[in-house]
Image (cartoon, rainbow, N blue to C red; front, side, top):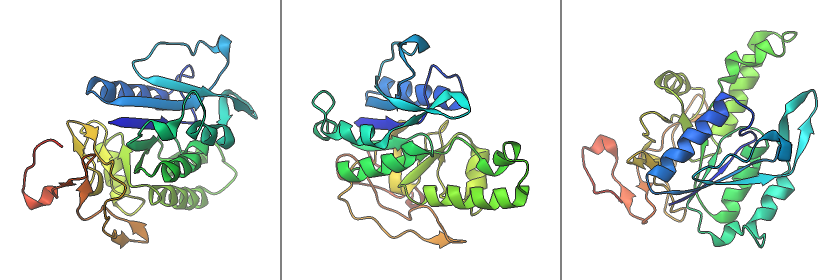
Length: 246
């Protein structure tokens, strides 16, 4: 399976998101999958040339005002990868797109997935409801939490499935803050996008998808019908059936 990841940040900046991406990508490669990561270019003097078992496509990016460590990806540069002579994403047979961050990578990642005709999953790394008040202290925390909740729900409902770092975060999102998903450490995705041996297997975007239910205006897990990269339906785990690895 070919997995295309996209992120607004990756090493050399040291943070939890970079570490999670590296761990996730290395795990997929170890299980026999192919991984390509789209990430910002921090310059030749940044030390970003570390060898990885997966491909890293570094794209020219803008400096972020007041934050010299981070960069802003350029959507036009990302979309140009679809037909570029040296990358040609449309010729690679990408099976699933994995968005890692909620900024330019999120919105451009959705556009990429539509152009490639593949399912899209996203990692929910940051609980913004508890994060924003530390950066914007002049605005009441209740207002920030409401805005963060709407932001997270909007982004979560735009993808096929989310991946979260812990059971605690899964429970928080299941309370009506966003799409219910699964933990990275256990590797279980909801019935719409299941895993096999900790590897996402949702790659057939042409398969029919059931309409999701909603609670508090937010999409809940797909009730059944995960479709694997072979085009065969994965059984609903609640049905008590078993299936061979697709």
